[in-house]
Amino acid sequence: MLNHWMTHLKGYVFVELTGVYTERLLNACLHNGLAIWSIRKLREDRIGFHIALKDIMVLKTLRKQYECKVHFKKRHGLPFLLLSMKKRSGFTIGLVSFFILMLVCSQMVWGIQVKGGSPKIANEVQLAATELGIKRGTFQAQLPPVEKIQQEIQQRVTDATWIGVRQKGTIYEFEIVEHQLPEEAELLSPRHLVASKKAVIHKLFVEHGHPEVKVNDYVMPGDLLVSGTIGTKEDRMQTVPAKGQVLGEIWYTSKVSVPLEASFTTLTGKHSSRYALTFNDWRVPIWGFGKPDYPEVQEFEKEQSFDLFGWEFPISLTHKEIHETYSFNRTYTEEEAKQVGMEQAEHELRERLPDDAEILSGKLLHEAVDNGKVNLTIHYQVIEDIAKEKPIIQGD
Image (tube, rainbow, N blue to C red; front, side, top):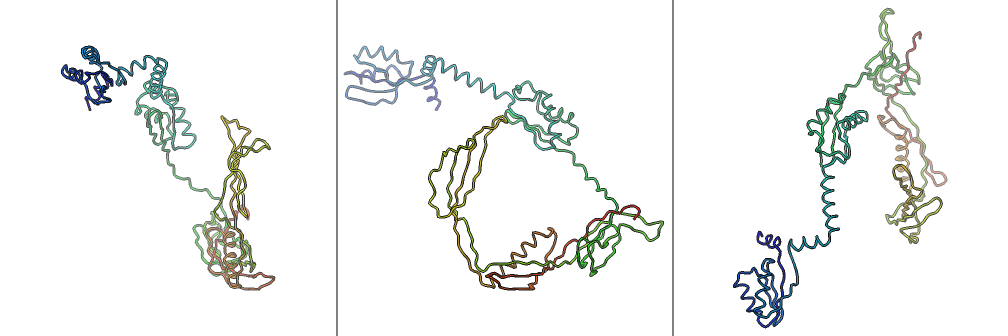
């Protein structure tokens, strides 16, 4: 391998010898210690081989003794490359300038990234970094070490617990960890808890205040559930913010109709795309021509605008997707329609209930078939929190 590289550094040439005594000339070259390799016979009177550049003059001297002609076919190695670059000085200067420019740019700062922290803290870190000279276009050799930068930034931005600085190539990264302050206790004004709807009390969880109802009591909207007034004597009574959860059992009635015959439309999965450039009211198609061979279709269109430095171009790209659809009719039996109706009614009820509400049961009260529809009336037993706040006004 070393000899191979040395040969390329010093240069070598592929030579063709033509004449009657080519073999004798070749033997004379070997006898004189010339570096020759890859010898092959090209024709009856022609031989080709590689020879080191330094031995060319000796070869020219020997070939006169044997009446042979020398043809230099291919030149290899660093000397010939340098000669070629000298002839193409413009290309050589441009190539060298490019590498120098790349080397210079690699020693400059080209980006600052701030991760974590609130916008206020991130802005303070950005300003502190700028004051230290860390900005785009600054040579890295002019900046202090990363440890020094981290120490300076930490001293200037006191609202952060820790600020990490890392250099990744031409980019400086700042990672912020803010102080985690305990959440302040919620300040509540004195209040009662009253019923928000008719219900039978199912469970009570009172944290503050005096409970005014018990399990299985029936309450109406506005009835007092938990009092914010505590104490037994007039001189020792005080008001507090009542807090707790009062679960009530509530009955909801849902009515739903399900047709015995219904039409449905679904996507088959086949689709084609169309792209067009839009300018005001003009639209120029650029991709996807013709109409797809779909019996029924549904179209979805999306428009994307272009902007540069906050200036929006008057041209936008419109992407239209044409999906094949399939329509079919479905016939339910009365029992199937009833099952679909029950599921539909429960789904609609859950949409109206709070997230923490629990449906205990559902009871079908009435079922009738009229004009090709199954009409259902369903009662649901639901457990939910019925307590709502009512402020205590001084003087009440």
